[in-house]
Length: 489
Image 1 (cartoon, one colour):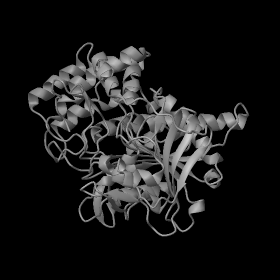
Image 2 (cartoon, one colour):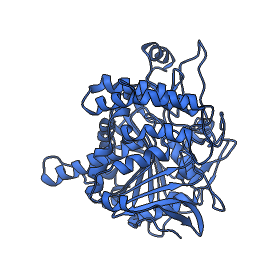
Image 3 (tube, helix red, strand yellow):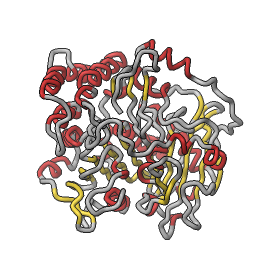
Image 4 (cartoon, helix red, strand yellow):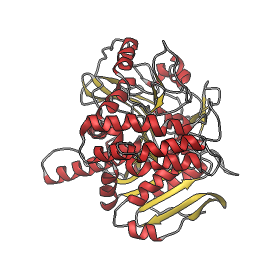
């Protein structure tokens, strides 16, 4: 939902319709002013204190919420990093025949500051929210069909997580999630999964999270092996990133391209596109500011780059179309809002949640906006992960503007890895699911990319042609999790 906020309204808003990137002072992905931050603080409920158990999990088993397939174990609760930092998680055992030996995948939504319950209930979880937002139905195309799934609300303060909100960079977020996973794998209920194949799946701001988390986990594994730290190695074998912001310098021209000439319709007038082009290329413009950020400009330079580029390029080029699914004008009611369901006592009384759920945490987003993390280059970490032998999938929906395929494919083209020459030498091939053409893809070594037709920002939330909702995404996920390159069926 794109709109200008009226005077007297809180100038920070996230669409109530299942979106991930906030609108700040009327700008999509904007940097809040001091006045906006002050206004937000007036809205903050005083922090509660909880009976935490630092270094341990607090768990509710088999709540009966969401996954109702007979015999499938689920657990929800908190991993307490400290007395005042608690990370919410929701684990679902795989529906596969041998779940104890199935892979373990974590799912992380973006924002920064958005809850991973978005992915659970709108995208790839065992259940999906109904269009009225009053309940859920079983999802036959759940990613838990082939993998144990662990949905994590992070950083601290996001979604059901609660506590001191200090994290403002992707690296700091990675460090906290690693701590959480150490607690998770130390628990007797989940230690059996520690040696299984481990995967990170993420989207949107996950274009930063995924490469940063994966590179940090590999670094920690090496430190454990060398004896410089103690801990449980994480058997990272897969990284999947959907519609992600990874390399802004490569990706921002994609907004101009997509707004003018995407597969569906132009988003704005030629004059708006011309103005954005000038904002990109002029001296001191968006390109120069991102370049300065990349060249060690520091938090102030990077934060100003985010403010300038989103105010002058990302936001105006969206027009009045839904930035997550450009086939609809604002407001787009799909995917359905989760708020009424996840704040109802019928749900919260069963799952062990302690704080009131919110889709995006203002304080966390503001922390990231202040550091300029948005405009940093995570492509270097992505290259490290690919070259380390981790199987990587980059995917994108072609109806998404906010992180469109033009920008993502430019990022992929800029990669410098052991597979890049092979990848660039190939042409795209149709990706089919049970004979239905549903996208275009390439493979090179353990790296794959696919553009999914008819999908918006949350790729598993959509269907195309004769396929059911999430069917193409499940095939993509299943093939990668089986250590296969993408293959048409």
